[in-house]
Image (cartoon, rainbow, N blue to C red):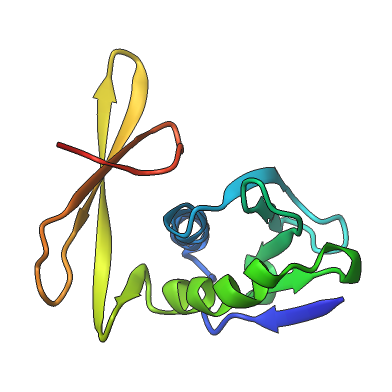
Length: 147
């Protein structure tokens, strides 16, 4: 099994870091296939992410008590898309939600909207170029361009 450490300290910010992990996966088109914890790391949060229509599983663990966040890929769950996307997601988390857009960095700020009992999330790009692009999703679905 391959493990890749993320240079972030989750102590006291577990909720924020967990949200960054899920936002990064969503931004890069991954789906959460499992959300739970690891018995060997008490109090940890653990995710399995997959790319729709592709083989392979990217695992992410957040363990506040040990001040660690890491990715893991098991030998039987490797895929080309993981090698391509892992550095991008790692960078997103380490930079606090900024994604590379060419040579610039953009941040997707989240705005939760309550709509008829369901949660709708509107993301607004506030990058260096202030692109103003918006995306909207409902209950964690893949973001789609809003009108």
